[in-house]
Picture 1 (cartoon, rainbow, N blue to C red):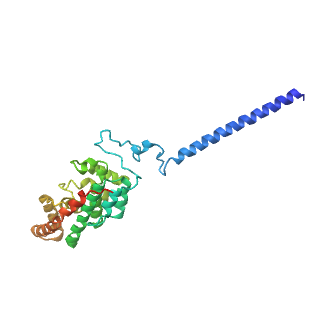
Picture 2 (picture 1 turned 135 degrees about the vertical axis):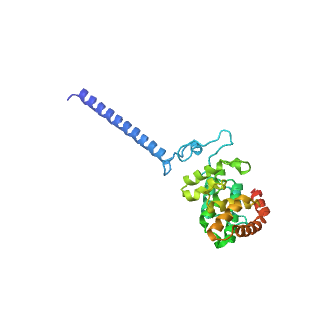
Picture 3 (picture 1 turned 30 degrees about the vertical axis):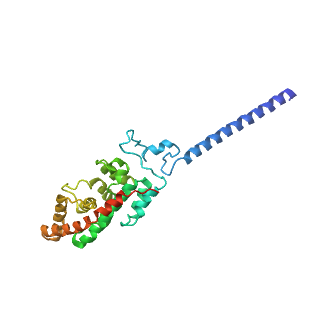
Length: 268
């Protein structure tokens, strides 16, 4: 082989090595890029690398409100609001269940909502304690319902101080999306619909707590509760109604303190 041929073969080999090295480097870069993109997804595959991810729900649906009046995205994963923490911890009312507290923190609930749910839960405990064994209810379900009945107002904060019922189905859907059983999530949707023929005693007691916490009395609702209890115990409806009236009058007597607790400013 002559010198010219040797030089040509050497040059070709060098070119091949360079080409192979370049291709390998590009593949490695692509692989690293894929890994980095993968690191920006959570365990469910949801992309969390983009700021726009905060404007989509777990299914990727955009839940932003252009008007600022409709549903908004809960502040999932945000640092807990000190004002919300004070609504949970200030003395005067029974504490909310720990799982409800964790959920409200995760959703970035408004402090006023935390205070309201705590007040209604407090009244539900007192109501059940005073009723005692007079009525067969699912105590845990009633207390969970009282503690979460308005959770849909995380999505519709305007309904915290204004009229509206969009938070009701939204609250049930929100709880179900977080793995809450249907039998427990239903209170969020049904607490404002006590006049239904198929309303259960558990649902009615949640609604009753949501009324009397602020001293409001609803004669039709109380009559319905009395009739269900009377049917279960064999007592006369009037006798049950009289006892229930005494219980609710005593609970309503603390309404001013509970209203003050909900309205209290909770600045740093």
